[in-house]
Length: 328
Image (cartoon, rainbow, N blue to C red):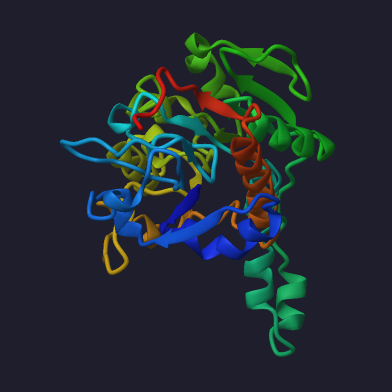
């Protein structure tokens, strides 16, 4: 059995190999293999593929046993192109760094430590000391979470320790956990006017695509800050840019984008609008979860799952079970 690691996943081949206990062969493939059938002839029905994205416009993927997505999001996978016999699994472990990123974003928005450091010098010290500008606190602020899964709960538990009030919007949450209140999705319009910070932490689906549009942004406080660490498309692109440039809301911290490169040499703009030029937009390159520790945890989990596959044992984090045996 071979394991084909596509694109960025191939950069972690050594981490995966270190966790494997079964004699499995690892084969790296370029990013283009996620979108092209040029490499499909190498993949056999007994093999596994690791890729964050896999699409075949107008075609279908070859039959293979397992697609292991090296993340939680599945919107990069064309399930219709997969063979009926292919199992799909995902992996989490990113809730820790994403929660830390969100807390850091809120704290920096209130405290402005970077700005204070930039303005400090021995020459300016007497004046800036005498003219100190009060900064804010996140204590007592209301945090709204759209999505209350692993990421939402990790954010909420940390925010609660800072004295924040937590409102969560989720259709499936079974218990309050660290939240003060959980609201069903049809109460979004009631949630929005209450929050000082709104974090998008739900999956991208047909129901959530464009969930935050002009009307929703207009319903928020003029001082409210939107933080998107999920998928860009949950917030309507044009509406968000207009709301920020027109100061309809206070600001946004954006770590996810509307355009991504699909090839090794792609030069693609992250958005049709220049968010990076706005003084009230903090733009980061989809790095909220990208810590040194994250790949170690994720590839250790995937190695254990691939060992289970090789031994014929039940897999963990199955998001789609096979409906038929792969063709032999």
